[in-house]
Image (cartoon, rainbow, N blue to C red; front, side, top):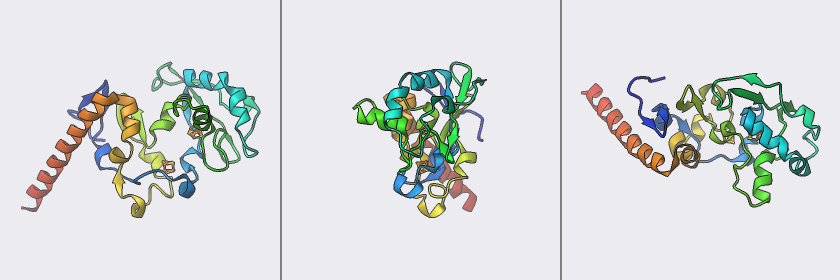
Amino acid sequence: MENDNRRVINGYKIDPIIFKQPFVKSCDICICSGECCYYGVYTDKFEHEKIIEIKERIIKSMDDSQTKNVDLWFEEPQEDTDFESGIAVGTELHNGKCVFLDKQGFCTVQKIAMEDKEFKWKYKPLYCILFPLIIENGVITVDTEHLDRMHYCNKSENQVSTIFETCKEEIEYLVGKDGIKELEEYSKEFSQKQNLEKKVSVE
Ligand code: SF4
Ligand code: SF4
């Protein structure tokens, strides 16, 4: 990871890898089946509590590939300073996928918010919203380790965009409207710098 003089936007340091990491133009569940959800996710304790509060609503929208036994939804909580509360709670796997992933590849936690005409990410854990971005020690960077496991969005022939271009809505959710404008500027500066460096190296 590049480390010195990293720009700070809305309290987060920015790893410029987000501007150059190739990625698909958009997620397509019909192709990938939501495979980034096959491993579960760590939620913040607060997010976990919010999900448990609406458990009956979630159960109503689950299909027969999912478990409706709430006791099987989460792992034991563990200390983790990467999370606001200091406690992370992992989602369990069922049928080889996160307990909240339905057989069509949709996240039930997001699906119910949309069905109920709420904000689509109202209950969705932050790390799920952000993937393939991740916040690591206050730095917005790319979860390359998890991305490397993917068969659709990590294939070079499908990567016609960059994570920054594809994930603007998600980044704006994190850094706000002003933050995304600052990032647009930073992205331009970064590519100009890269082009200049390339030019110098061929001369
Ligand atoms: S990040 Fe990759 S695996 Fe996950 S939904 Fe998007 S395209 Fe599919
Ligand atoms: S909570 Fe939803 S988005 Fe997150 S891993 Fe599970 S199914 Fe995927």
